[in-house]
Image (cartoon, rainbow, N blue to C red; front, top):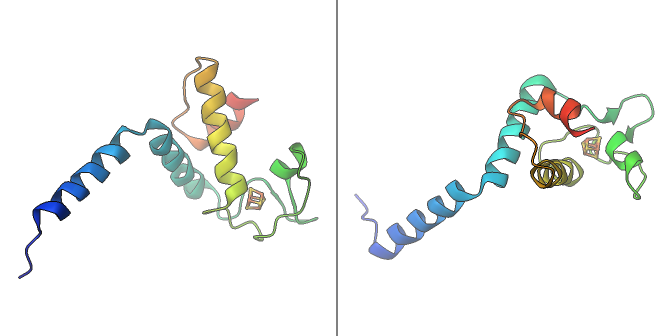
Length: 106
Ligand code: SF4
């Protein structure tokens, strides 16, 4: 049986505390999990044209290069990141369900 050294234990505990204290990261993970429970393919993926609706709204217009696989997509993660900042800045309540996000953010 292997033993955990004191340094390993401290490192693990400090990482856990940092992760627990980051509300933005927790909220983004929750939104991603919620989105995945509702959508197999990205809700912002235009299947017919292959476009990304989020990219269409930004300066970087373009097609989805991931065929709608949004888990880990930097565009999708960036959208969650910006949504969090916007809602917090405006003092609005953060949705706990992904379906409420699109209604809340626009
Ligand atoms: S680029 Fe990302 S956010 Fe845009 S449609 Fe593709 S998976 Fe979705």
